[in-house]
Length: 184
Image (cartoon, rainbow, N blue to C red; front, side, top):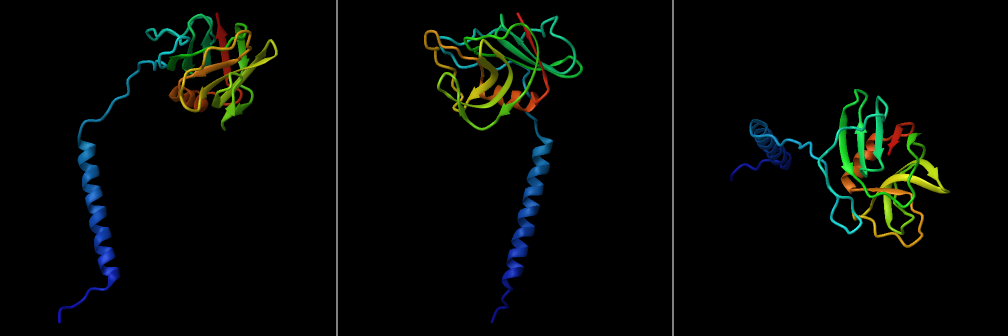
């Protein structure tokens, strides 16, 4: 009668074999080509009211120094700027109907969980930084990643809508107390 191995021996043998196979594949993958990240700005999907895509621009002069978020009203663009004054990310946005006055603000409260925006769309990662004309002004992205619908006539919306991936980057960067420089 052939000898039987206990089940723990089979499981141990299979586990050792699996670990060896994964290690081999990891070493092979490490020796292959590696993907690189492009420094190009993400462009939101086309929408009649979407901002016009343009080449990434330099951080506007007069926007301050140090770590900050820079929002250009005329370019409909945001820059996430690190402490060495280098732009780490830039992207176009969809502004609301209420714009903040040019100046320097500070991120106050934030809301990560989905809420209903002033335009009726489910939004997330809301980064509030001021109030203007009785309306909260904040960066956010739609939960479904869509661009905002055209505003209703006379509507006051303070949301500055970001593409979803840029909303995640803003959320990670713009913690409470972060400077927000708004330029014309």
